[in-house]
Amino acid sequence: MFLEPKWVRSHFPSVQNSKTIFLDNPGGTQVTQTVIDAVAEYFLTANANHGGVFPTSERNDEMIQRARHAFADFLNAARPEEIVFGPNMTTLTFSIARALGRWLRAGDEIIVTRLDHDANIAPWVALEERGAVIKHVDIHIDDCTLDMSDFEKQLSNKTRIVAVGLASNAVGSVNPVRTIADLAHMAGAFVYADAVAYAPHFPLDVQELGVDFLACSAYKFYGPHLGILYGKYEQLERLQAYKVRPSENTPPYKFETGTPTFENIHAAAAAVNYLASVGEKFGAAFANDYRAFADRRAHLKTGLRAIQQYEKDLFVRLMNGLRELPGIRIYGITDFARFDSRAPTAAFNFDGQHPRDVAAKLGEQNINVWDGNYYALALMERLDLEATGGAVRVGLAHYNTNEEIDALLAALREIAG
Image: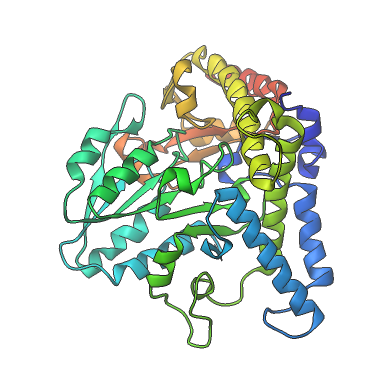
């Protein structure tokens, strides 16, 4: 059984109750009713700080612990203590970069890529102040994929950290992170992975990926604004966190500076449970490697496989239409046979038209898309697009429909014509 759009959309009030077509999803998705309800539930029943010996504080602590277990399932972490919550992926990455920076010596090398969001570049470039040497892995311009031969050239016995994204938030390219992690570990380096643009579309498994750290954002997969960090426990334990003295000095708490947004943590767990419910309802066709739906991890894997297949079919429809438009330049993989190697995100431009103007014309028709660089600054500079306004970006989610894709294409035909 494959996804039923009507069932999916019934869980998203803003999608149901609006004429807007949400194709701005890489910048943030809409949320489920269960996420909205979870925020209210927290404030109504558990609105207290943690660590108290009274009922609301105890309920708070129970909610946060359940959320940690939910994200351990979502990422297939070995234990819930490997899950750190923070305000966003960027803040968490700066925190870990600064902590890892304590171990660096002048001349140590850090590898970043020109395909990444700047949140997985700038925190590492900042370590130049500690004498680190930053190396940038190039891309193949024709399809916006990582140049793996260049990565191997950049790798050396001085490499200490490799920062790489699982998928490009701009053009959707999916990187061979397991291969990258194996090569980096052979060189004695840590691997920090950005899964923000990958997490809404594919099952995530940190054990299979072999990374040391991985960060993602709940608001990109139907939850509230919250950053989530996975770190191997032994690494989190060894790292010295920048924190206030009274706070706990064990993982994950030593990295959760200040009072967390408890309501968002509780609500983010509701988003994970929603994704598991997709697997429970629609995942049977993708469950051949499970004897039964015994736990949430199995539901999550099969649910995200079902989402992946639905979005791939939708993306083929989108790409078929885009390729027929006059004067269009599409960036990234366009070969249908390679669509398993990309997320359902498309970036493009029309000859002679500024991307902001195209996005504005679509906005007038209640079609939400992004334009600019979407913080993929290094990529836009490499494609020579930054000086001319970047590109238009369309990003799909599993609540989008064929009818919405057709409406977008009709509007783009008018703009292109």
